[in-house]
Image (cartoon, rainbow, N blue to C red; front, side, top):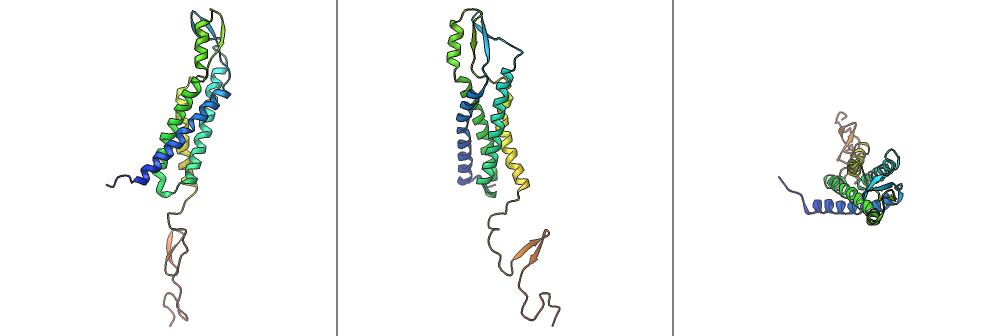
Length: 200
């Protein structure tokens, strides 16, 4: 059984690396658009000031929105940039890169402002309100990016039927064409005669 070629490995590695790097702006964006979550300091510990509030849920929701948009965009871009010979390495790259990007976005977004929050908690007296850093509570959301990118790619494969390599060339006489799922010989009829040879 023939192993992966250098070109296949290169496509997988490049796709993974490019998508993984997208986690950096995604994490910055998540930290920027996440709502401020307020904590109350009790005995040196930060506790949600409003456990029933919508801010923690909205923080998860905005991460999910970023992951969904990024996943769909990556899947579409990979399909448009790739070809039939690159399907498998692109799919592996979408899955690995999407997961890496999602994890990177989570950790980066969470660490923005985290040091300041922790210092404020350590110094604050009991009852003091402090604003926390972005925190992802529904951690399963991290799979949205890779899963949706692969699904977008596969859906385009089903809807848009790409021609195999070389099928875009101009057909010449005598080559088989496909009509209604069957091959049809396009060989030109000889002058004064019938292709089937039924006429004299």
